Length: 96
Image 1 (cartoon, rainbow, N blue to C red):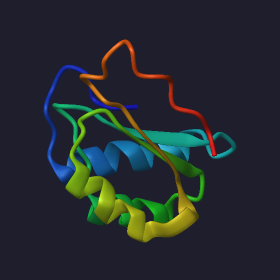
Image 2: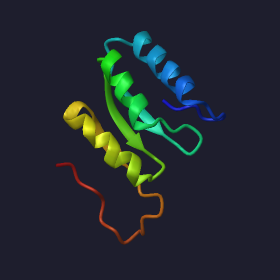
Image 3: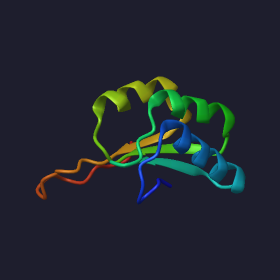
Image 4: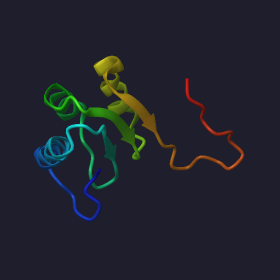
């Protein structure tokens, strides 16, 4: 659910995500960090408090520091990350 073509401020991404969550209250929403749309841990925590249907976070950027900080939210979210330069010989990730 990121902004695909434009960069946005933290407040802009948060406002967009909040509106999406409000528009689909009975569906789970996943935040997807991309190169031009990166939500930091503080904003993600704010969204978690006001959007009960925000269920996940996907990191498409590979910023380990942000992912470690987001872990402070505990089991509130399903989290996933994408290794952008994963060799083809690496076995696929499995769910726990």
